[in-house]
Length: 375
Image 1 (cartoon, helix red, strand yellow):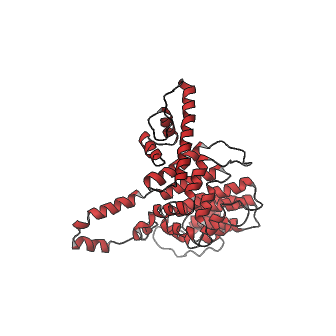
Image 2: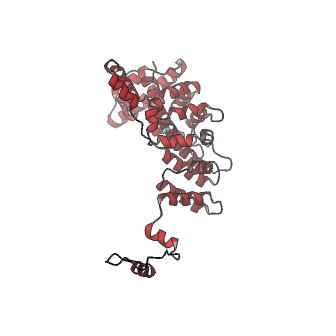
Image 3: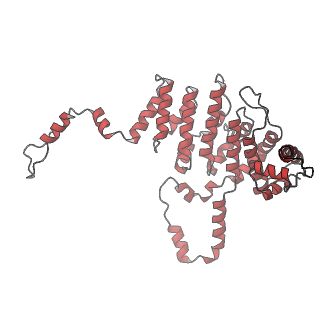
């Protein structure tokens, strides 16, 4: 520090504006000291982090810490390819954090989605939804959970990416379907939530279409010329302007729900759930998954008018009746017998029906509409 101060005084300009001894370039400044004083740019920090993560001679903890730092300082850099490589290689902890970083970068970022999609990542990501040979159960579960997170970032509001779920090698829909019966209940919950997000009709797109149809008769030559000449500025969301239907994923998901037996797997997961847990010994229904699964089924039936086979309707209706009976018992034990409570699938006004509606996050009216779809 003293040498820097002395150099500054010696090379400062006098008050009269003249400097008979112009400063000579310093050749003895230590770049590390400059970095300590000024700090490194985010780009430099991220490049260092990715190099550490790729360095197999480093300890696993160092590589994981580097990926943690990378997620914190994420900027738009050309590091998709090495990150994607880390997702399918190296220790489980490194792969898990690499997938986590990918998922974080993709969230609500069309430009990042497009850049990552160029690597054809779906076959790799969806293949990781099954445990790897030799991985510990907990490590495999963490990877699958982060894969759902990354798929959410890549597929939501991104119909072009969703269309690649059926390409050769991806087998994406079938693997998502199997994830609804994953041994880890967290993976089941996240999968049901993701499918519901993809299936949900896009309200903004519908409102834009409606507004466009209403204003068709009010176009003038000047307004049409203005629309044609409206510039699309380069930014992370320009893709939605150049391709307005990009965010509409409902139709593709609706088709996949029946084509790949996702609906039937969902119904089985609700009415006769597969045991979960590390040893597969937990047979109790998980209320969180149940709520998310019912919401997915309701979106399919009530918002998308998806079809059900009669056998599927029967299974859902009988399951609702059983759950109503359980709710009635709980209600009776808490506040006395309610002998008049209805247990039919269509009645949403009784105490048991109200209990199920509340349990599944529905209003009484929504519950009635839902149960009518399985009559």
